[in-house]
Length: 197
Image 1: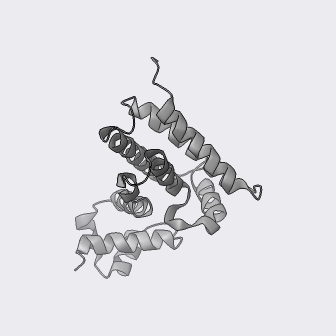
Image 2: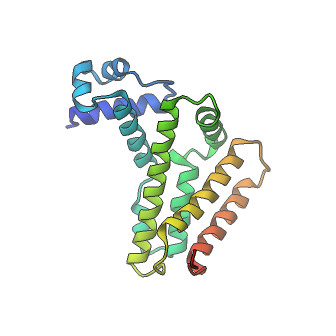
Image 3: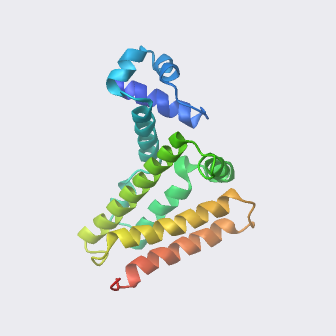
């Protein structure tokens, strides 16, 4: 049976996925079938609720199982996991709309403090996840030990660039081009020895 906290989190993530502009405590509490004071017990501030919902949404979109599947070559596992960052919830056909929506929400001088804080949660989750993938590959001996932070930054910079491409009109073969670019970045992480800064 789902706990009260999980029910609240499920309601918040469902509302976010369905395009809720703002997660108000009252709206989420009503959707979860609990009182506002109950919600506040688990999530004292609206920011706590939003951060937890963003983290849960991110974790649902980016499962880790594939990185541990040693029947698949390590480079391919890492490439597939990174590809999931570009296609959360298997939304290949909706990638254009998803990325346009993200770019409307987060950048710009008029971005709200809440939107900036939400973006920071997403970035921290991406860094944590990619760093964990690299650590798994290092631990199994598939990837030489190195500067995980630098490698993570390289891979996420490439993913960011590819996500920008998805937000704009693109060529018919863009998915093949993006896959090749991502594979090139993964090869760089495996093949280029870390050099001193």
